Length: 101
Image (tube, rainbow, N blue to C red; front, side, top):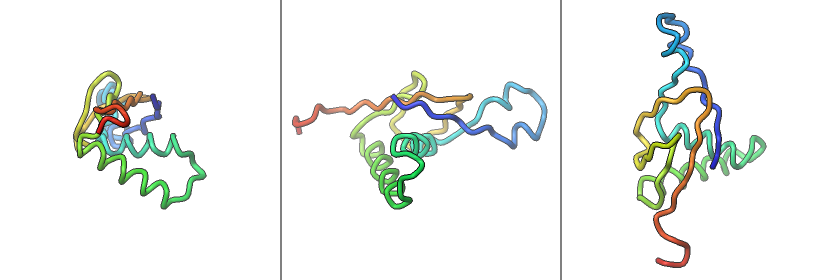
């Protein structure tokens, strides 16, 4: 499991209105994956390693190599929008065991 901090939606906060919507941030699954990869490889990792890791992770999700569980909800499409508040817990589930291809 990788826990990531979800950035605050500043547009919702600036608009005022209901404070509930100010606390919820809509993000695409691929954006959460980028946050998770950054958390996993660290802030000091070279930019090219970060880019390659994101590309491989998004490609794997799109191909169906694994599914992604975000706060108890299952996602298989990196372009799906998910609404998160504060932090998000990402769990990766591989569809096949290693060596069974």
